[in-house]
Amino acid sequence: MKEKNYNPTDAELEILQVLWELKEARVKEVHEKLSQHKAVGYTTVLKFMQIMHGKGLLLREPGGKSHIYRPGIRKEQVQEKFLDKMLQSVYKGSAFKLVMSALGNYKTSPDELEQIKKFIQSKEEGHE
Amino acid sequence: MKEKNYNPTDAELEILQVLWELKEARVKEVHEKLSQHKAVGYTTVLKFMQIMHGKGLLLREPGGKSHIYRPGIRKEQVQEKFLDKMLQSVYKGSAFKLVMSALGNYKTSPDELEQIKKFIQSKEEGHE
DNA sequence: TGCTTGTTACGAATACCTTCGTACATTTGA
DNA sequence: TCAAATGTACGAAGGTATTCGTAACAAGCA
Image (cartoon, rainbow over all chains, first blue to last red; front, side):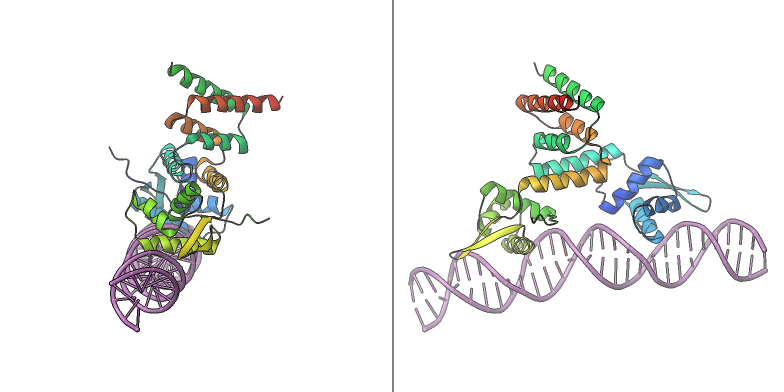
């Protein structure tokens, strides 16, 4: 019965992405990962991870010399939260345009398209 | 050949929503509209609209005593920009989950569902 | 004329985000 | 043993977003 009002910032999101992928990691590894596509100082990453730990966005435990960090929040929860916010703030609550725009402008595999169609079908039938 | 790097903040978005709906309005009217669902000072709204005018997010012209403001950017452009940012930052570029989540959690009319299906169909056929 | 009202312009306070430097602690290997 | 290497904690600077108070100005009217 938690589900606090988590609101990751952009920088926090980048770190969460790494942790969601690696499941767990030390500051060193996260820093290395992020360094692959942008210049960022080690202590900058460290500081963020400390802040995020304070907020509950990350969990951590001692692991020898350094700490081992883990995500403190599920990816799906964050995705839904952002989606909700965006729908309210720029789509005024209507999902239709967003769906069309996403389908129109971004790659979707044939299998995924099929799944979407099936999902719509089941939705329509459920409403009879 | 403009299309600058507009990046409305949350507060700016609220004002844009009003302007997109009313087409044009004075500070007074925008303030009244926003006051309907949150407490906000008149000069706060004024200040934002001045800032936004400076950024090109709003256009304005003298209209007797006060200024008449108009959106300086299309709603669709902002929507696509936000969608793009969200896909990058929290969905890692995959539109599929976003579409499913949007369809699953938000209302869509039968007609809209039909349109989405048709759109997918045409997409699939185009790839033969 | 001079007061009230509606409006604009601007400065400033506060809060938060991002970034990093520096100090301190712990481990380790020569 | 003790210096280098590896980490953590923390403070602080600089930027942006948000909010509003106050001054100034123009128009209208008593």
